[in-house]
Image 1 (cartoon, helix red, strand yellow):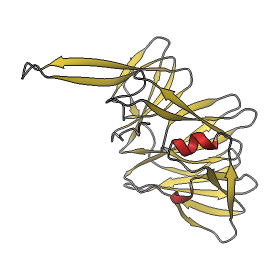
Image 2: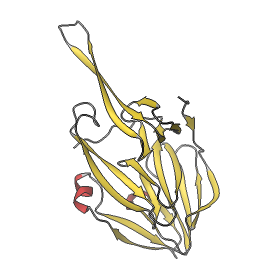
Image 3: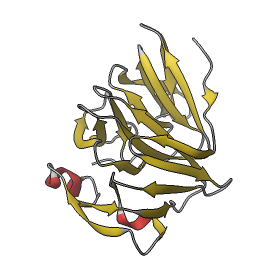
Image 4: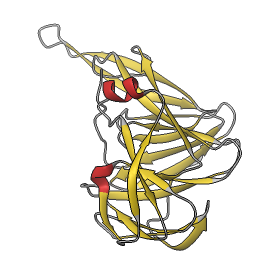
Length: 230
C-alpha cells in the first residue's frame, strides 16, 4: 500500500470548470474565485469578501429536510459574476480543489464543503448503523457531489493538512474516524471495533477505526474533527 502524500497547499491562477481561482494562506487559508459566466454556490457563513459587482442570491436543493436534520442550511448561497469573491472557514487548515469531469462523483464528510461551481450537483444521504459510526453514534450524513455532463470544481476544507492516497483494487487502509474528508464512490468504508480488557475492576475499552477498501482515492486531514452523530 502506498503512503499518503501531502496535497498542494496553494494554487495560483488555476483555471477549470469556467472559473479562475487562487488558494493562499498558511494557517487559515483563503479561496479567491474570479467569476465570469459560471456561477458558484457555498454556505453563506464562509463568505469573506466580494467585489460589489458580484450578485448574491439563494440556491435551493432537493432533500431540504435531510439537510435540516444534518444541521446544515436548507439553502445554499449563490454568487454570480462578473467579479471576484473570497471564502474562508474559521479554522486552521487546508483548502483543496477537486476537478470533476463528466461522470465523476465524490462522497464528502459533512461540514467539509466550501464551494462548488454551479454544474456540480449536490445531494446528501444518511448512513446508519455501527458499521459507519464510532463511540456509540447511530448515524451520520455524507454529502455527494457529481458532474453529470459538464466539468466543475469542488472546494473542500480540511483541518490541519490534507493528504491523499489512491488504493488499488483490494488495497486497504485503516483511518481514525474523524480523519477522512472525502473519497471516490468506488471506495468501500466500514468500521472496525476492537475491545481491550484492562483487568482493572473487569473494565474494558474499545478502539474504533474506519477501514477503506479500494479501488479509489481518499483525502485525509491531519487534525481530527469529531463527527456529529444523529
